[in-house]
Length: 286
Length: 160
View 1 (cartoon, rainbow over the protein chains, first blue to last red):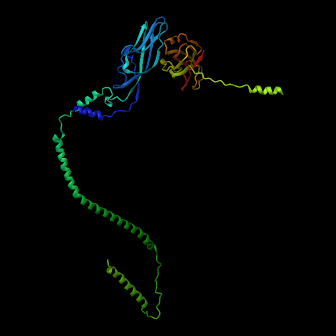
View 2: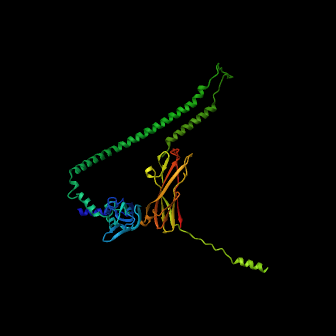
View 3: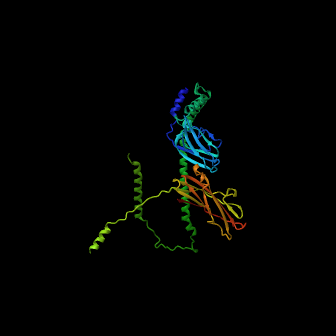
């Protein structure tokens, strides 16, 4: 089972194709003494850390007539020196600090052994300061970032140890099964209620929509009526009739008004036509 | 007539040939640290650390050995200051503060000082840092008026 998990991790973990160099410098490696190790340079789990510069400074303490050589060095893993610089102070006065910087051709940290600043002859050095500049990849800050990172397999195995997946079946877990049953029952009840409520809901929504529509129309009618009433009636309220009595001025001459037969015929014919038109609605054949 | 023809022919056979060249500098002067005046007493301005000042440092980068002289002149007047009604007494000095080669340690002993100028013989290729101190005293125990005071260190690289 554990092998299976590890295999899955290999497949699931993204392979980090993005890689860029970060740069840094050390503190004073000679601050605590005139020898120092190189194992703590840069962030932990770095991959491909390379030294690209060495800078040192110190003040020689000597008499002018004395012979003195000062060596600043780093051993090379496997033998010899990977960096070595010697200052010959023989016959020269001391007291003035010397500072030097060197570009190193990106030599891997794995090749760099312990560093030292040593005096050969008569004299000493004070205020020694040795600094290295370096660059490194940022894609292995976590060992799980890439299978090629140092410590990747150890990290994967550590994760697998923390995760015990053997002999566990979730369907045997009473808590899980009871929760699943409760959920299924609740779902069933909910479906039935939804089915029953769906018709009611549609009718309710339909009536609500109609009511809203009717109320909107009514409200608009009332609003329009109020507006037009105001416009139509106001002039009459403002109109004032001049006072006095209005007497009948028209006088009928002869005192006899004959019937208008022509008007009666026209009225009758229109009535007949109207009756015929109304009757046509009922006699219409489909 | 003949002489006229000869004269016109001779002018046709002359030409000005340009010569150009480029001299690459082999002595570079860079300000390493700007100086700051401290004011330890009302009548005194000083770049010395003990007086609360910052010592100015200038760096000479020479790529050709034994070809240049370094001349560093400490100030003898303020380049900017409030109006001063009394005299200012200046003192200054320049010393090698750091080298990039052990063989340059002899520069300090071999320096020549005249007036406010200190001259160093740059016999080795490499970098040399020179630090200068400058002190100004106003009148006789007279207080400097309030304001900003500026002065300039003059650094030269003279070909031998």
